[in-house]
Image (cartoon, rainbow over all chains, first blue to last red; front, side):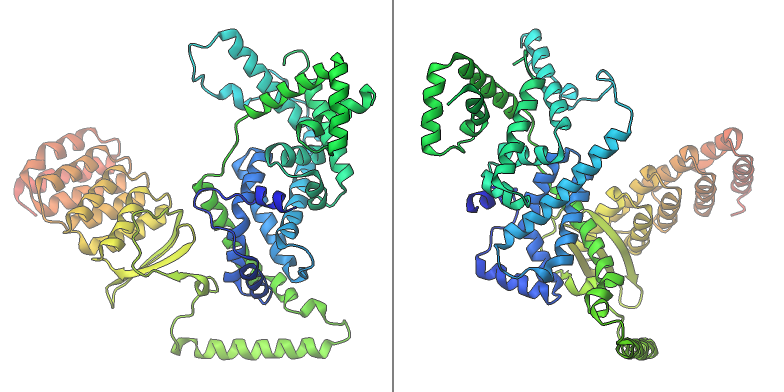
Length: 209
Length: 311
């Protein structure tokens, strides 16, 4: 759990360092009494990692901003219910995970209700990237682009839970037990989600890897 | 361990999520099973591909925008109906109407008293202001400004009041002569996207238009600002500058190139005020070619006035 939190709370350059538990407890109590400045200090402690996770998940700055705001507003609204029975970071990330899962579910529902896009017409992040190594074998470059395209497409097709578990495991290095805890589920469910996600990615890239 | 069990454990193997005994068992299976070893190799290649996927890091700008959005959302949250509910209203039993009535009465009395005395007291600070760090002479050179929401001059004290958002909202207060205040104002004139703020900023800078940096900013705004109102305000400020070839060139440029007829007409008026015969050819040209008939007429009149010395 500690490892997981450390991993998630890595700050971006310029972010605030982690406070010791006593400082955090004081801030939480003050924020629970309605001290807005204390709440803002708590936000500063977690915002970088929350924003990084959101951005990596949705890959859109606008959507990441929405997730940031929704997460911290939910934390603000329910802070009075935090009873110091778990680590504050665990409680915070549980709220954030729920917000992210809800967002991914909403996005998935929207996609289902829309007509499928043609593969050719879909804008691809990787395809838009300029080729920085002009001397590279063009065949290899094309293959790299195809792998990247299929990877994005496969990631987009994972279920919201699979997507979140995969993100937390692969890119944030969290332990499955911690993922289960923070997503409000069991380690076993997290394990199954990771397995299904991996299988789907392998199937999508079969024959090209 | 059979192949199905082995395959289920491969992702856990790569992520180091297997217990020691399970790992050893899988290692033994992999050593003996080419198919599972091949699946592991494929999985490693998948990880390689995943690693080449760009990692998006939040930029300081994005973080600043998030903070600003959230700050505003929190303002609404702390002053809206949710705040009322959080403060206890929603938790009261339905039957306890007398308490609700009492609270409403207290609110009403408090509001009335506040209203009655508000004229006699110092201006109220917004709820946000209570959380704002007053500017304590910090160096602004590294400050990342994400928004300016108000620029207010105080004619009585000669001070200017700037409300802006950097990594968090700040209020700066100081004389227009203060180099750091000027730094923010000059930034706002040239870079800030809200035309209302640029306009208010020009109004503040107008009183110090003799300062070379401010003069340059006024000329810049007249030439380059995309908003008609802001260019007009810049022109009005430039009107008060000492007449010089540089000022004349900027006003002639406005007369000949500005897209807004109001700005062009003001430029004609300013040129007339200075009775500079060097502007005659430009006036004659505009009197012939301007797309707006009223501008052409005003220019023709100006040419006549200048020729007769009626100014």
